[in-house]
Length: 110
Length: 115
Image 1 (spheres, helix red, strand yellow):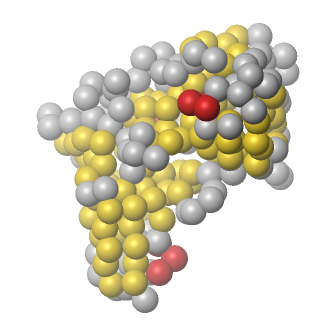
Image 2: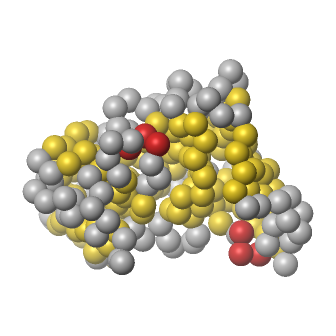
Image 3: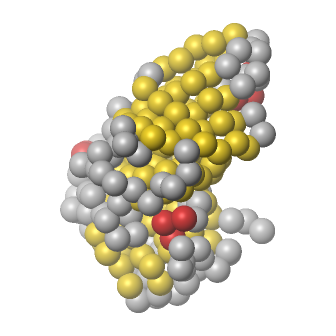
């Protein structure tokens, strides 16, 4: 499987703290994307980083990509209770397929 | 603008029954796909389509059929349901051309239980 893996599987932090989650993947990629999933809902796209980029920002989100280590990290700064969700990385693979990791469950305690 | 709409939201089937999960999008996206989500397994791609009349298999296609007669619709058919197909199913769409560089838009899922 080309599926990525997120680490940690679960993370619990206090509101206002930063949350960092990591993604490792197995094959070379063109792009890596991060998604958020609230309980009982579909996934929502957060940010895309291309293989020739090392870092990207969007609001309180910061994503890094290290293609030599086949890994990416998602940092959420100044977390809020509304950030409580599962977070997934997705990589492009053979043809037009996307491969998702197993997710990190983030709980932000008010 | 409804985005990606999946129906039904919940379904219970008995082993051997058949059913079709519906997916429709109103964004004129050429790429559509079906995923299943199981605990500890993340999302796994079942089938996908890059345009009307074109479909291809993903990681876990066995037991599922798809067709793409229009740009808007991409139904997923279970011909003979098995308990192993108990899962949450998500439909997702994306623009074509740069499908690898385009975000996926997801529906809210269909929770299927096969007894």
